[in-house]
Length: 240
Ligand SMILES: NC(=O)c1ccc[n+]([C@@H]2O[C@H](COP(=O)([O-])OP(=O)(O)OC[C@H]3O[C@@H](n4cnc5c(N)ncnc54)[C@H](O)[C@@H]3O)[C@@H](O)[C@H]2O)c1
Image (cartoon, rainbow, N blue to C red):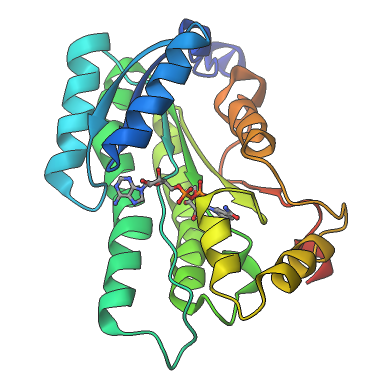
């Protein structure tokens, strides 16, 4: 019967081989070393995700070394802590190029090899700002809202090739980007207290909180999950 024959694509996450892409060589190499210490294997490619040639270099290198690409986690992103009246054309262009164009063209670049190998998984990173909007991150909110539309469109488009497409919707997470946001406020300590209070669980998330959700979405445990946005925000969105 057709339903039995159309088995879901199975990704070999257990092989733990990864290509790590970042435009920051220092932190990128640190991350690769952590991957290797944890028993994984991988390589680092210095690349700017807003440059199509850089994306192609990263994809070609992965295919050269591993012969296939099972999972794309498109997570690189930048913010700009500006209101509508403060946002310049250059701010808008930078955010659209990195957050939206980079995500789309990286996914497009892996789609062909994934189709040829019989399937794959694409995971993007949106943000609570893309759902509820932030008055001091207007352009950023727009790019992260765009990711939500990209997920539904690409999930419909690529599903026929057994490529699943989803995204994470993180709330405030303790990373460099979050610290920069807090520092952009008039009173940093009050801003941090407000951010904690904005969640139901009264806690800023950790990178591990988000990574665990990402691991689920790219694993075979989520083999029937596509076109979805998984909120990982300590309950921020239901309060806003
Ligand atoms: N931290 C939060 O509170 C939060 C909340 C919601 C969504 N997000 C999103 O999560 C993702 C990860 O952000 P983070 O908080 O870890 O921020 P971060 O600034 O700590 O890390 C972002 C990473 O992306 C890399 N990067 C940025 N632009 C790049 C480019 N053009 N090419 C290649 N690499 C590039 C940076 O070098 C850095 O390693 C982003 O998409 C961000 O928008 C973060």
